[in-house]
Image (cartoon, rainbow, N blue to C red; front, side, top):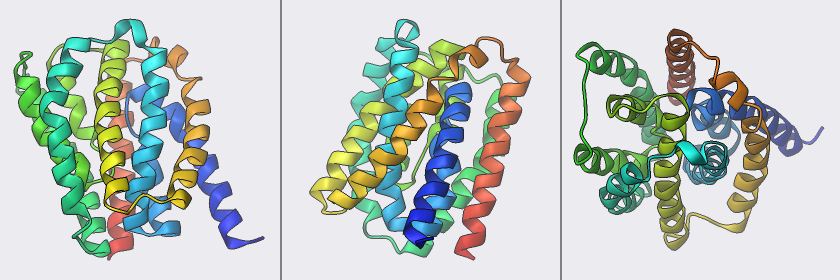
Length: 244
């Protein structure tokens, strides 16, 4: 079997599973796919592919949870997130592939204790705080592949849960990733091959997301949190192993 065809079969199959899991916990789709994309296509090409996959994944979640979305949060969040993600994407293209791997892996790994600490102190946010969060997350989103993991504690701290959390976080992230994709295109990183790869993998993610809603409505919070941390841990260690 041709090695490229084999890569597509593996990545698209995992994308289907990742779409289901990402639709259940609100993130994780791109985190699961990132180690495979880095392995088959390299870290610099993997990041713009992930940006396109994230756009498709978040579009599906927005439609699934449309009625539960808090649009005020989306607007306030992206007032600062969009310019920050553009700055972050410009930073990314200046980094070496191995450094990108190390940043991605360490970022995901350290988010596990940080998320637990924020939850332990019962961190609570008001609407205006989301603009500050957007600036911080936006820059990180420009540099790393996915920030759904770090987004999670902030959106939960604002008081959003289950469908409202998944839909609002997806709508907010969608705007950021569109800005990131446009920036990559302007920087010459996003070509027709990457666009095709992102849309193909994204299609399988979209199919997986369609099956997630029934699980979310019956998912205990404790299980939700354990699933989230397991995805972060496995993916971070995989990426760090490849960088090493």
